[in-house]
Structures are given as structure tokens and as C-alpha cells.
Length: 81
Image 1 (cartoon, helix red, strand yellow):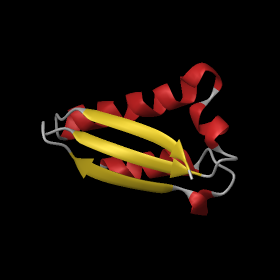
Image 2 (image 1 turned 30 degrees about the horizontal axis):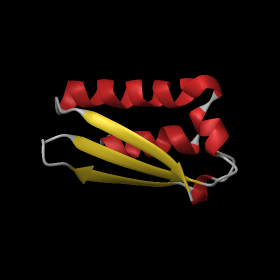
Image 3 (image 1 turned 180 degrees about the horizontal axis):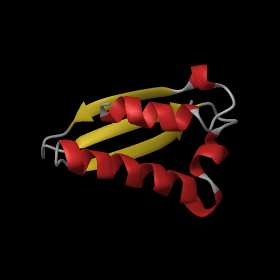
Image 4 (image 1 turned 135 degrees about the vertical axis):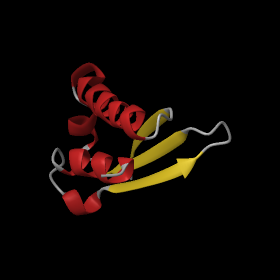
């Protein structure tokens, strides 16, 4: 499973409307990966979690997967539509 699919699976399990989730991957100049996550404004609180704990857990899982497979640095930006 690539990083976008992993991130999308994790986010869609949390939100109320999984069809509103958009996940895209971009390569940066410093050979790292940036993942952009867009969710419905009603679901942004569930994705971020209290004190950002859910978002931090998602970032940890995706980064660990990246280090096992590609050994690249990953950043995840979560925003609402």
C-alpha cells in the first residue's frame, strides 16, 4: 500500500462522509514527500482530534510506513474544504 492509499484509508475511517476526502501527494525539491489532505469542514475536528492527537497519530503511522519502504521524509497537511 502506498502512502496516499494508507493516509486515505485512515482518514476515511474517521470522517462521517468518506466521499468528501481528497488526498494528494507532491514531491518536493528536497526529495521528501508532501501529502495534502482535504476533508469536509464538519469533519476537520474529528480528523485533528483533541490537542491534535489523532492527526499526530496519523502522521506517525504514515511516516513509519515511509521509513520502512522508501526511507523518505513525509509531511502531511490537513485542511478543510
